Image (cartoon, rainbow, N blue to C red):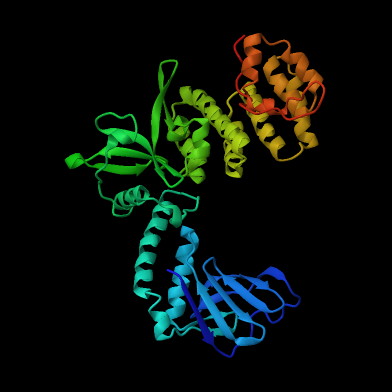
Length: 416
């Protein structure tokens, strides 16, 4: 819905204090309607003969310097879901209140009958209510990625309608489970694609061939693995592969550490070492995913897990492994401190530490010749395994210092 109209009014310009020509800048002044603030700033574009400012992503107001009382309003809804909800709510509120404020300056908005015919405020309100539910759905599922309304296909809207029923109305839905994932007769895990957004969900069979849908990443989700024939309960995050951390959009990164901590507290003492080792491997997947995608949230979450593993390590050797991971994450962010480098030196000088761990320590210290010497002590199988560690990103070529492609990181010693 696109609306373009003029309003004659006598008003001070909100950018009268700006001088010069051909400028584009942010103006840090609030935009509000009836004391409700919608924006904390707006963008100003100014040339010699024309000025315009953009409020949000949908509204552009312009006037000519020769007639500063004739304001042209051009409202074109943004395709961005997040921007559209804010912009539409602001625009409806401004029209209902016949104006808005930029700081203390009031702007009148009174549509002539011919302009009102171009804009159906009731229809705009109906669309806004629908889009608010979609935004609420994505917030429930912890989706950070924005949603482009203009590119949404018919099948996308069908899935959105299904998910609204499942997560907003909390009702079972009719779906063709065969199109989702491998499954058993009562429960399935699958991924749903909605216009570039990937959602990992659980489908549990209800009555009348309908399914209840759940977010895969709630704090209580988990599954069982076996360690030396002992059943080990782990968070659902442990089920993910590297690319899942990059591709899935409803990953709740804020709950990952808490999820592992909660499961750890309920793990029998005799299995806690196995649980920490599993957590370490999962943390390394996140680190691999970071090296592939450079998503900061992955590095931040990997750091949280690495610090927690280090604090809870049960033996000196476990603590050395955990320390390598803590410091290889730090090394991705900054130079190591003198104290951190001394901690690595302790690892290299410990006779109980194997060659693979010493290779990692020397790489973090930037001592390539020493790393090479201990690398040569590994078997061919162990060398190939080490190349799959994320810490191998710090390997330096014999003739030039470069960052090698990253794959995995410091884990337990390869078998001898």
